[in-house]
Image 1 (spheres, rainbow, N blue to C red):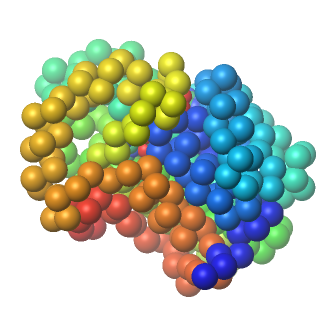
Image 2: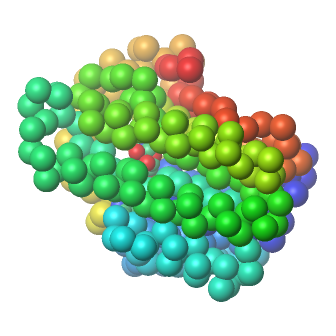
Length: 265
Ligand SMILES: NC(=O)c1ccc[n+]([C@@H]2O[C@H](COP(=O)([O-])OP(=O)(O)OC[C@H]3O[C@@H](n4cnc5c(N)ncnc54)[C@H](O)[C@@H]3O)[C@@H](O)[C@H]2O)c1
């Protein structure tokens, strides 16, 4: 099926690494124009090149720390400057540091978690709504997590990801009448496929074992009905599908866990 995304103007936040990179590749393969917003300009530049090789009609890097005040307006403003509109916003940038809730008491650390996972998402969403309303259509996809439903060692992180669900559904309810669709994809555990998949600011840059060690990964795999881990391509396929006005015209306010059935929201 032709998803009708050729030349679509797409902004992917956190597009330089792992899941975001997979999403950039997914839109590139549909012939879309993709803006890669990331704090890591160097890695984003590499992904830009990959996007062009995979068929993107255009690809641009927008280097920005999304926790800075006004960042969302600057990033969306750059997309409007480049392409005179925005059809798809994927709020993917995020950060996670596992920690038991009673021990995760370093306020500066969890405050950063809240800022990275929420501030940029709120600002980019607010900035995209105006031009999407004017155009009478648009798709906003929020990358949340299965941790939004409560997971061990994911207390503060899960809380930020649960907040994203409320934000997405509010956007769906408030702006559906303007043609804006707003949906949530909750990835299961997605490990970077290789070293090319991440840059120095990726949460995985500390080493995979420091985030999830082999025993923890094995434990998670056994709880997945399909008994296999999720890939960045799996997430990309869902995000691309739900962003297609042709394929998902009547889909809004929905939460999809793309996790092999680990969660069933
Ligand atoms: N990987 C998983 O297992 C998993 C599971 C569920 C949900 N998620 C969510 O998916 C998203 C992507 O996860 P990932 O594994 O690809 O992470 P990642 O750390 O590999 O990639 C995130 C990207 O966001 C960028 N970023 C971080 N802070 C930023 C900021 N302040 N401003 C701009 N860019 C910033 C990083 O530079 C990085 O390139 C996150 O929202 C994460 O919470 C991941």
